[in-house]
Image (cartoon, rainbow, N blue to C red; front, side):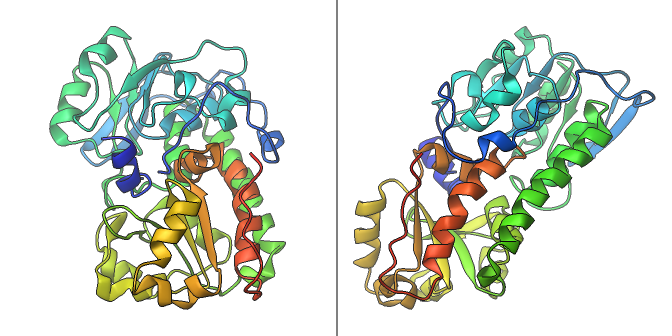
Length: 351
């Protein structure tokens, strides 16, 4: 799957699924990335058992050779002081599958071997060749058969048993990685620090409180992200409320295409669109006979995020490393969208 998969799963899956690597990120947010913790587990951390969709997995000692097959699992590993020996690149443009927001955490350590998943599943033989002692598939849609196959190579921690695939919160993802690495306290501190970055942004913009917002992408029509998607959770964290009927329309999934009759779901105080080309897609959306007549379109309350930009990648990655990067770019755009002035232009971030 990729750019398309991304737009459903990332950007419509889990997306703006992201792209970029190698280049250092510019602008605000990067300085918020603290140096990674020391590479050693807490005393008494093992054995540890982690529950997941396909049962539970027990680790008897600190893993040293980690492979990640989930969308953004590598970020929590990097943030907690380890570098995976292999990580899966869903988006195709980052060197070592490490985003610019994670470069500081990587430092001068060797980059992971890059694996790929085109929608057919993990590269089993390549994973086996890396001799892992832990495989992480937290932010994933790993099937039971894939889990069984990978478990023959190394212990596997799959996605949670509660909730749909591709829906683990970044907090739970970080906490689970912390348990696996024997770094519970560091993981808790990382979650608290990242949450503070979000709540500080919300406190600086009290006008967001109680306003409605939704994230969407023009994939095969109009696709909205539901309450169990991390992009929607970020809007909640900033003080916005999701449309009342959103969970009913999306159902037990992270997102769904909406019918023409439910275009009204997009008529919020702000709608964040993840698009291929902001100018062209805005024009195309406004030409839609239903959407173009909504107040959100007529009054300029739209935030257009270019999915192939670094910002576009970060907004769908949703990790403790990418979130500060995302928040520092998204918040000014949201502020412009909800300021009550129809002539305020929502500017794209400089980088």
